[in-house]
Length: 628
Image (tube, rainbow, N blue to C red; front, side, top):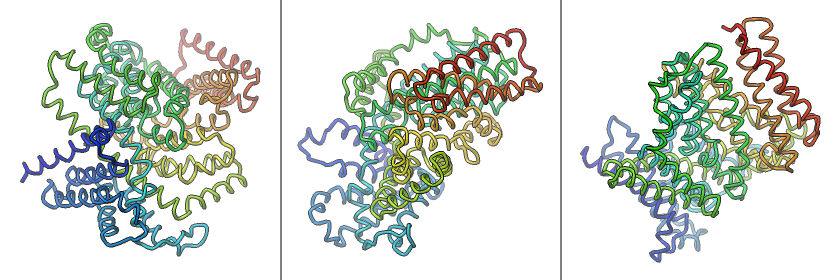
């Protein structure tokens, strides 16, 4: 039985990868099969549900029950795919052969979602579905449009505004390819190359291993797009090195968690959410990447400066050069790994190809370079890790995409999204835009404590984004605001999934790790408010406004990094300096808001701030503040 289960699991996981690649390369069209995206994504969804039952069995091992439920899920979703074109012509009939398989398919999807992504997100989707059936009994503004139960089922099951809708299409056409590219990079040794290169380059410097964590996590995280995956890839190397160099466990874990979480905002690839943002805004993916560029640079700059300050405060030197790889040798041995990323950027930004297709060309380039570098064809183990491991990585994301279809579909069809948007808009107009933004940030963090970033963004963009845009906030600024605060839930206690995972690797207390992580990521809690009031920070505006916004934000970020670490000073003078720096950071960082987006006074106050920082730096050379 165990062998049968193993073969079944391999077949399911492999099929997810193969079907996804075939769809990206338009294989059905080349074979003369006229398939719509709805017909393909539901097949991927059925396979992912089956994989979830096998990967997360009810007992210690998967058995007949898991196989049976998986086959039932595949069959019910394949039934919709097979009949989709015919049903589109007679959807109003709602016959038994249409809605009964739909009930089975949706229930099994939610159970698979519970197993793969946790009970919180599954519970939220169940609440949304119950609302679709009984929401008409609630008082305004929560009263829902009345729909017959069979119509609700078919709307979710087979309508392109339901489960087989926008989010699943984005995952199948775009995100899937980047997940596979990241997996192939990991298998080929690309992640180890970036780690070793960062280690050789930064490892010997003050607090070197922590700086390695920042650089390596930014590089690999922008490709993997997964905070936890990034921690498990780079953190297993950097966290022990940081502890060896003298970093306390809470600092080692927090630095890795914050750096890995930043991978999702680091261009050029970012995480899955960036593709969804582009689809919702109906703009090229490149526009989202450019808008996210400066905030990402500031995020890692402030983190890097704080890491340096921590190392200076505790007198932590770098690792001996003799124990580190030689950067030039690492580069000579692994420079080939840079070429596939170049291929990706060439197709994505220069030729303007579809992002999913661009990523698949990068995969092909990487596979060829693996053969050249290793002077052999990929082994059976390597192929197995790519095909089956890729399917395993894709499975929870596809299920989340299906859940997103339920949320978007129900909120729009029942009119709840519109009613809540009106309510939030009225709240914002009566209490002010700042109150509205703080409330939105709070909601995003609370929701994100139990859901992945993409799921949080999807819920918020359906309900909150229209209200923000109605208040004259630039659409890109509003969407990135929601994205950032959904992401920050990974670092914000009490849940703080990223901090929890990193603390487990470091043997640190999760609460202490989480609080240090919030401190290290402080700028990410402030930047979204800044670009809402001045979109020049996300490169929307004239050159002068952009230059002033970026330069003042850089100086403000530098002051913030210094202030946050100087609060550890034990002398009264040190605490006074820390307070002055913190106030200065907020004033100078937001000076384009207080003084005007094109005011030359911004240059004056920024210059004063820079002079203060240079003075403190010069003073540090003759003796740093006495610290704990």
